Image 1 (cartoon, rainbow, N blue to C red):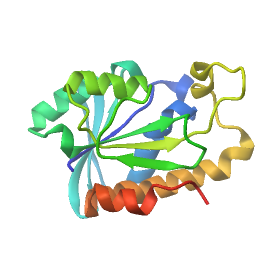
Image 2 (cartoon, one colour):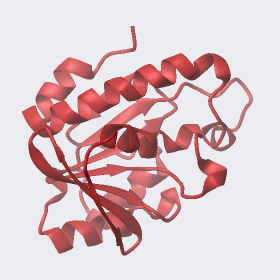
Image 3 (cartoon, one colour):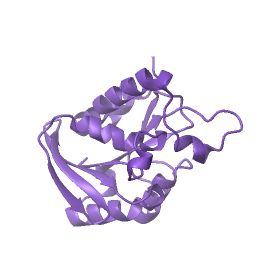
Length: 188
């Protein structure tokens, strides 16, 4: 695995929203590591060493439903296959704090994932879904994912991001299967 993609929406308006947990996980992964940043057509690419390997971390800088183009262009320019990618995104069908990693699959109703699957013309793309909790009864899911976490959820979000960092490092260093076996469970 060579490329990690964190999904979110650009701009101050979306910072800290549930939908941007993929961006937040990539930022947490970087921590205080020494990195090289460059703008890439449609995204921000950060190169760092993760688990002893050089990794490209991409944050597409268009809206979520247009994430596929930058991912495709980066994979083509780096000579990487979809299977060498890990997409990190939110999932409101999972309880807050849950991590669910899969080697392949459908978009699960996630517009960013749908865009990537369409652009790469395959469902053989590893992905790590981070549970952001479900919308309250009667709330539009689109409004819910664009909302900020409640103050009482802060500890659970911090814990989720901490475990997501370890899960990404495990996937990069030891393989997706090991990450799945170790982290695919609900938050304690």
